Amino acid sequence: MDTIEIIGSKQRLEILRCLSEQDMYVSELMEFVGMDGKTATHHLNILEEADIVSSYMEGRRRYFRLDRNVRLEISRSPERRFIARFPEQTNDGIE
Image (cartoon, rainbow, N blue to C red; front, side, top):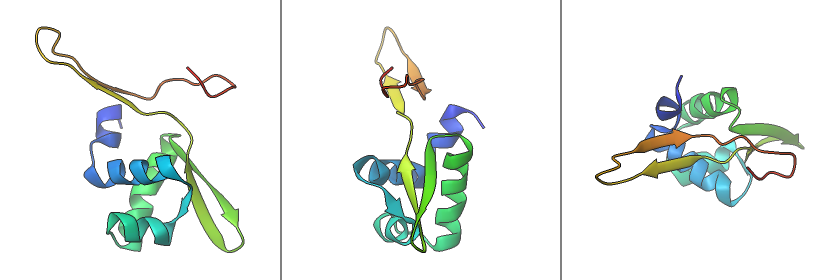
């Protein structure tokens, strides 16, 4: 799946927005984004397979966190660029 396909879903973008603010468990994401558990898990699995988010257990809850920056650049004419990418991060978390 390419970058545009990964972040091209409104629901996945909303999940990324939520995770950019704080780590969340599935039930919280379901409430904030307005989707059922099966759909939330599907989108989280796609984001996890793309190494954008990761999960960890705290007690009985599985939390998700944003691991990579997501960069979307859109410019008007004459450049007419549309770029979506996941910049590589160094050990200190900065490109």
